[in-house]
Length: 169
Image 1 (spheres, rainbow, N blue to C red):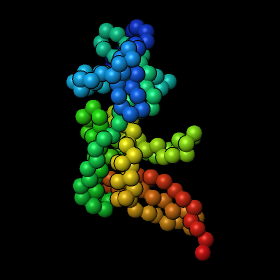
Image 2: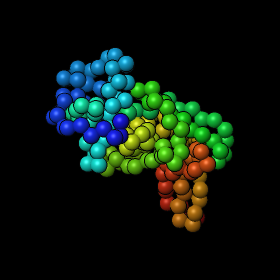
Image 3: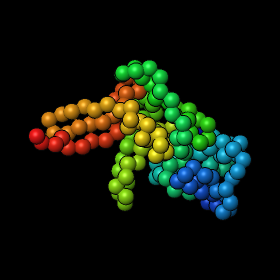
């Protein structure tokens, strides 16, 4: 699919809401099979625009945040060799590793954490608040001279969840 480069055919009245709901012409798409089909042909370009792409055409759609939402989490093992696996609202599964990195930014407007996992080809899944809290609950801390770094191991890599200044005293 990444090799397809069909002509741009315009905008489609389709929106993926922040909660992972897919909307078409102002109505939610209720059939999971349809959402999975659309998700399978979803691409993001270098300008952060989202498209549904077939061999014959490319149409732009709107995405409020991330196109997917991580709704389930499983962990296996312990320590550095632990694996963290997420399942998205479209049924895709990813194990957090170098190709499916976990990252946490801070929302500029609210100051809240914005945890995401890379799914494929520049497409990310937003972690639900409940999953993020589970991650934090399982996290470990690294203490440096000036700060405390909280993170989690998966596939022999440490993924940072947040930093805080180390309190004096």
